[in-house]
Image 1: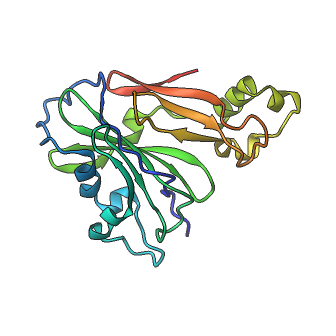
Image 2: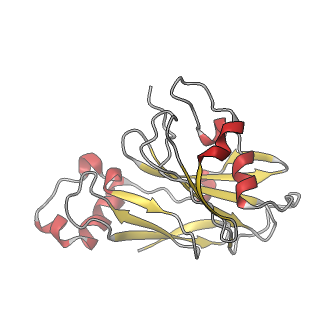
Length: 209
């Protein structure tokens, strides 16, 4: 069965956001991007081998295709992992509290782009996606695509059956803005246009049109 977490690319970016300190939690020991990425359990990342078993963490370092430690950026080769469509992106945001937050952009088996937010608190990684990332609906994606791509509105293209598949997230290697750009997965026109952005807003992210 296709797993819901299948990643597109991993880009880890060290960014100083305006996130509030985490409710009195202990400060995490400072680590660089590569160390943090290698410390996330495979089950949390959704790194399953083609045989359905979790990939041993020891194999993960060999997947790093590009590393920019200064900017906290990595690109990861997903070959041999179950249901992965292409490379993976992750952005590392450091909060004032020192608690690491990794944002991962990935593509599920149905070509749906999503974001996964992982927080390392008291030495343990947990999924905080619903707490940090606003919900993006198909209705919103359709409206933004038609607003930004004149051809989509003019030709009355039916985006309802593949609304999420019409865009991809691009996490920042520099800066703090996440871009959602149209793709050619089910939209043959207007490829690469930004339809909305996500920017830090306190402890969460907000949508900017």
